[in-house]
Length: 324
Image (cartoon, rainbow, N blue to C red; front, side):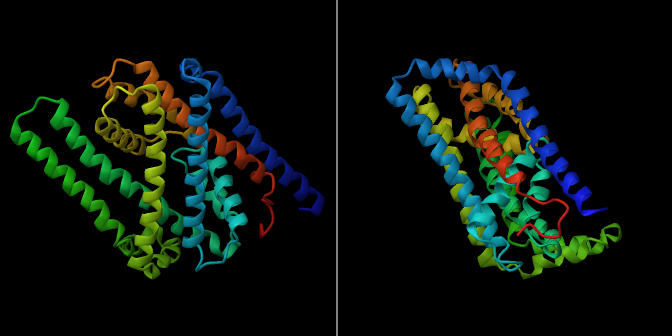
């Protein structure tokens, strides 16, 4: 392939990815009636409160993804040293890829393109550690919150309640155990013959120490607190009648179900809205308001970052050996 052909093919890939992302975003926003409902709800709130609330939610989104940048920079530091600017481009580029790929799988490809070619496979494994840390927290708090929900809102015999709590506790701590022994994954992959070609890349897990895993988990916990706070802030403004404890624990259940159900990021609002409306029906009759809040968070946390990331997608040279 000539240099000119590579150049135009590279442009084609760039604009193809951005075009696909833009098409998905516009299509789903146009069909998103809950965003219209949210706009109507916010009009009933004093302007100053509305602007402050939305500004705080957007600032928290930026803090959330900056923590992910810090986590990614920390995880990849032994492969190569990323500047903060390059790490920011990497994370947001991955977010653009994620919105139209199942289970966010495109986020791996979009992010590791900013690493040197020889580091990309191992970088994807380390990125998986960061995503797993987030899943551990979602599973831990979600499982315990489900047990609480059944205890409070579902009529069931005491032995059944006890069994549910036992299962929830075992499930929650099993995730913590697996996380702090993440090198077991390397051992498992090494045992599977059909994974022989990729098993060398998982060897990087042997070098991840417990202190490093704890550091990553604490960064993930900070992110978890931030995106929980986004929901809480909007609900306190729009649905102040919901008890705070119930509000928070149901948010944890929402995160748990969202993580458990395979979907495209761009369709995630459907899953979230359905689960949220059914959950919160136990504590409020304002189901439209709940779905509207969920849609607002979906837009702020996923669509806005994807739009930002589309600019970084254009800076990637997909046919080059390096994107430094």
